[in-house]
Image (cartoon, rainbow over all chains, first blue to last red; front, side, top):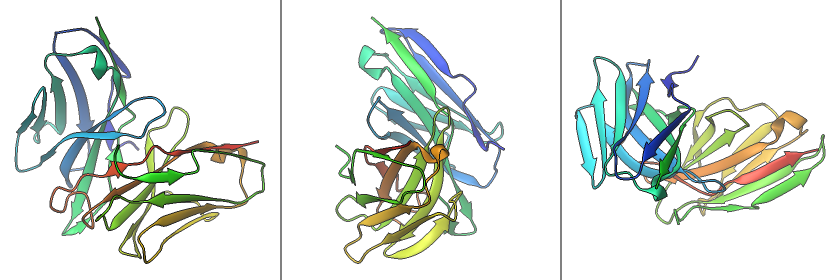
Length: 115
Length: 117
C-alpha cells in the first residue's frame, strides 16, 4: 500500500517553460514533505522541503506547494533548464505524537527538459 | 557532494555469501538511515540509527543487520544472499533524530550497487 504516490512516471517540458511535478499522500500523520532530485549513478539530492504548517515554500527557481485538505503537494520549477533533467522523488515524514518517523518515498517522476 | 561516503561503490558476490556495506555520515550528523532501491521500486526504508542506538525499523529482512559505531559510521550486513537482494543500497544521514524534527532533511550517499549472481 503506497502512502506516497507520484502518478506520472515521466514528464517532458521545453526549456524555459514551467515544470510541475505532482505528489499525493494518504497518511494524515505526515507533517514534513521533501523533494529530492536524482541523477543516474548518484544518490538523491535534497532540493526543497515544506512543513505542514505552511502551504508554500520557495527557493530560487523551485517552489513547493502543499494542499493538506487534498493531501497533495507539487513542485514547480520555473524556468526549467536542461540541467534539471533528472528523476524527482517526493518524500514524507510522519509525526507519531513526537516520535519522528523516517522518510517514505514515492516512486519518482523522470523529468526531461528539452532545449 | 553530500558529505556522506559509502563504500564500496560496487559489489559482486554469489548467492549464500555475506557482505558488509559501510557508511560514513556527514560531519555532525547523528542519524544514519539505510535504504534499498530495487529495479522499478522506489526507495525502501530499512533501518535507522541515532547516536549508536537503533531508532526505527522498516522492511528489513532478518538476514540483514546493521549497527552504528561510536565514531558514528554505520555498517549494513547482508547474509545468506539471494538473487533478489541485488539492488542499490543507499545510506543517508541527518543531524536530528528524525527528518521532521527541526526540519532536518536526509542527505544521501551515492550508494553501493550489489549484484548477487
